[in-house]
Image: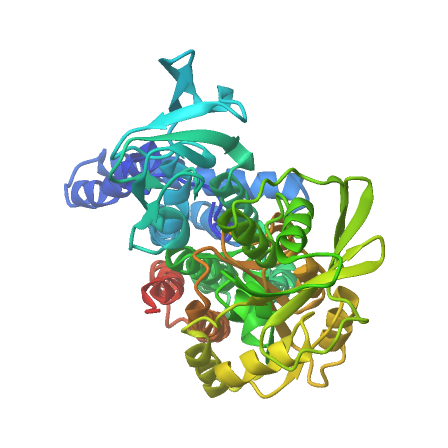
Length: 610
């Protein structure tokens, strides 16, 4: 109970709960008892004591039971200190103090939990946003079915104003979709046939028919919810220090209390030491702040998989970027095709499109779009194999066709990215693709430099293309033609350590994993990148990076400040209690003021502006 609210995974409406009513009732018995004590008859002392004992039974016994359960489970907690104080008051006949201390402690803990819950509103909203039912089309008929019973491939009808129940692609209709529940972006997106839509987002305008691709926990919002739940259970590094401190804190305070009694012979002073020594605010410093920061990030469209990753962002010295789809728009176009005598433009594009069929890489999308514009028939290649960081290959009409960066290809001194198409190890041609840098990339690089961070681009692309983007986004350090393992080495070799890596593709997964904190780009990034990354920019907005840095640094500062504040309050209160300047009741008040102050300071992070 007391001191156990550092576990913030329980959702409940505090002030509508039976606990709140019970605690309040127990508290109201105290002034009733005081009123009766003013009466003058033989039964008054018995009635006065009886009412206070009922109050203690309501608010004090649960604390004692929690302490006993903790001891039985071999988990010493701060409940033990308050329990001993209550029992000591009872033995000494101080029923009023025992009742008042019990009420103040449990009521204060409830306020702490209520304020803590307010810091997680944006997280809890994710859980509530997805509908339970879906309208499924069966043989032309509309059937209401639980979302859990919808299968991949089912066609789902979504009317204007409805929440989309599954991940899928639009097969009929066009609309505007509000994706703010996932991305934090309030501007609706226009969607048409073949566009992807996600569970938990809102269909604003048109009637659409969706072909289901993912449901439930496999859907994007399902994964987000699972990750956020896991994030709440992941302790920040500073909280681990607090845990070690708390392990010996209870025996220490108990020893101080006994010493105080032996030196002063005053039981009230010893009881006060037990109460004020309870390190609730100290235990709350890390968890409440990290949950508030994770919730604020979620509201902005940033998924953080645990507070410890925000701490790593705060201590980072550098940010390394992938190029394609990260610093660039991720919507490249084929601008040039270099032919060979044996293969013309159409054949080169057709071969490439057949091998790249179904790939989510931005360059693959550009080739597929070009094939569609040329009106080419695209039949998927057979035995498609992805060679991470090198390319992709497949069998077309009995020949092995490979696409990727080729060391034997001519060097093109232009900012266009060229990929080589090989047929049975013979060069068939080269496809030139141009991907415009994101409009905000230069602004982001400037803001990150102002935050004191070193910047670099690590890319598998040709040097001229990487150099051109680096110049446009004002990043002086860049590395080109890197394979995934070489990207990892580049991060490991950074002299100052503390590297954040930002990427979006399968070939970025190793770098995302090896960095201090890996940051993946958006809903449209590869599943591997999203699962490997520690932080995901759900709305694909690079401009949120400076905010993420500021949020992480503020979280780290608040945790340290709260720990210092908690220790300061505890030490001062211990001294005042030991010398008799604090009574047990005043000690309980000061204790809860400190705890609530820590929670309020932590919750303030929820109001940070992007």
